[in-house]
Length: 219
Image 1 (tube, one colour):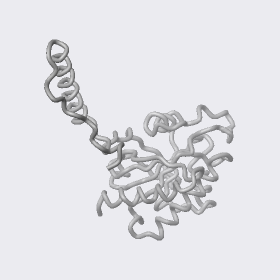
Image 2 (cartoon, helix red, strand yellow; image 1 turned 45 degrees about the vertical axis):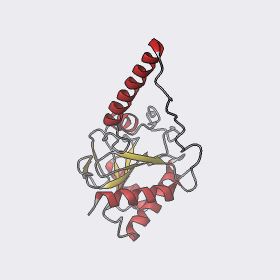
Image 3 (cartoon, one colour; image 1 turned 90 degrees about the horizontal axis):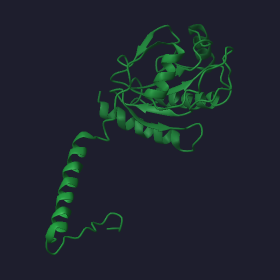
């Protein structure tokens, strides 16, 4: 056993005496009770569920948190006119899409969900055209639009990512936003974030984690 895993606590040979000793034992008992209570209320394996949402896909269909229930999915925030992080993000998402198509364990169980940060420019027609041009398969990848404020709130308050602030009237493609891919379980709870377009090896880690969550979700 290594030093960082070994139990190094020692029991006192006899209880401390006097008032200071009594206080030491009282503080120790209080600490133990607090730790037990904290452990009973905090579960690192059950993060909070995302806030409810409902937006429109490139096909004009409504996609909501409830409609995604039972599916493991990867959430991203991007927009079609972006020339900074988004092209590299789209390239990695297309790799995931290809993996989903070719892996029977993931096909129909893992989805990609992208939220447009520039819904003023990204009309349904533009999202449909972009999807066709990029080769996006709507059966496993939804590109959603809605009110900018609602999407920014979901991005920042729900996913804990940067939404890049307000766009210019022309929908500036230079707005800075998060390039993270967030893996969400079948109950709508974020379970990990990755940067496959910027960090070598993160795509493999994301897919490995996704397979684990799909297995946990069952048939």
